[in-house]
Image 1: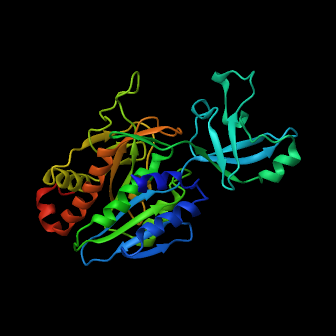
Image 2 (image 1 turned 180 degrees about the vertical axis):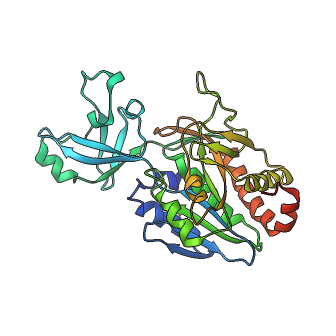
Image 3 (image 1 turned 120 degrees about the vertical axis):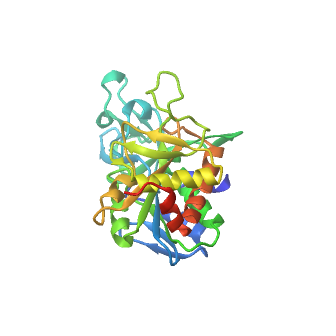
Length: 337
């Protein structure tokens, strides 16, 4: 799990993905043609003569941005991506220059009324001048926590979506030679509008696209009912708030899983979306599906995943590439649209 730990440790708040991009580029060396787009996507192209398939996993993370420093040296912030004030309260924040602080709020503020705009990072500064010597306006900060693994359980910050990045990197390293023309794209700025996926789609114009991201589970007390459990395998997405996945691509993924005896679940998510929704309606419409890795406690500094789910996600990505090499047979066995 050394690779996953390195990925989760790396800084990569949306719009400030240089550190995580450099780490991913280093892991991809020697595997194919590497490029970086103007928006910051990192792409690995493994050329082939068959159908062109794009796998996308976003490398950016939610975070905060310094927007105002008061006279007492407290740094008020804006959210970068979807943050909950209640789950973020009292988290540690590490800014991109290494300065660390605590995300807090006024002690008299009722937690039920708490908003991100009420919150500040306490960096221990005595006054505004000292804080300004430590932090600049516009500087981004990430949520800080330890990486823990016990048995098959992983607890870490930003498994959304460094788990997906891990799966793509491992699949690229383990992929057997095949005819498919494969692109592994690590997208930027997903958390603030799926932006990297849009530019990747137009750069590559694939025949098929599959987003590899995370999803919620329905296996904790009093949670929303959902037929997804931690440890029961990667999910094949049917629908979320932004997409109804392409039937053909969904069947290709499901058939590949069955043929390789990879356990899987079916996912219907009532809120949220992934790069898949942007990929689907780009370039006149791309046949798009999605694989989701189950996580608990999403968008907190203590997300929980399962090692076996991750390993099976890697196997499933490789199985899909193998399946597309036999595309004509796949068409015969899948729904035609």
